[in-house]
Length: 69
Image (cartoon, one colour):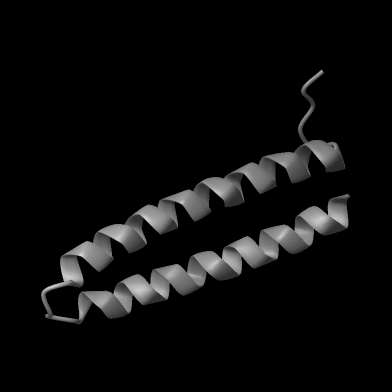
């Protein structure tokens, strides 16, 4: 279980970095759709960050670093 969560964490962090880079590249554009794309990328980044935090919490629970009982 811990190894699957660890792999999921790495995948989610990789996705987060990709979306962040896409957002930075989008900032250099000057076309009409730039604002809309920027907003969508920001929403996507926030959702992926929530997933990363959730996986970190689950990993902490599974490994025993976080005691809930």
